[in-house]
Length: 143
Image (cartoon, rainbow, N blue to C red; front, side, top):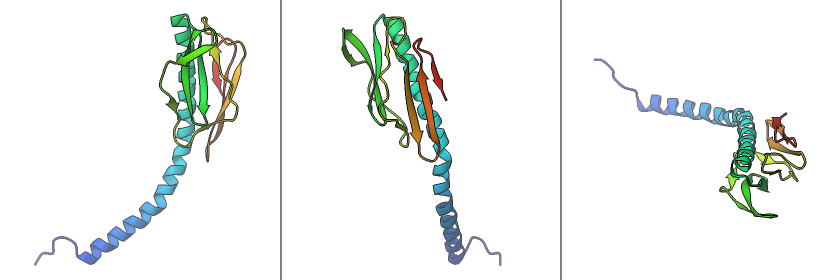
């Protein structure tokens, strides 16, 4: 007689082994994703800074990026001198990423330039910190 399938004991043992392997692997996968979260958060901020600069030039209006919380920011357009309104929804960073304390508020003029350079830091636990710098000409660099 040919034996097909597995016994209940074999299924339980394989399920238990699978659970142990999964329990060991999941925390390690989260640690492996930290550098990707840092890179993604930094790239997101750089891209949105460039969007604000390009909109300032294209619409002939001042734009600024206001960092509203440790993990969010919004692009705003000037409707009158020193009056800004939101031009986009609040942008949120990946869960683990935070923006450093007291980031500057870059305000792009109609030529896409800043009155003063701005530096901000982005931190993700287990991955480190990257610094985003925008110079007066509007060029953004990451270090």
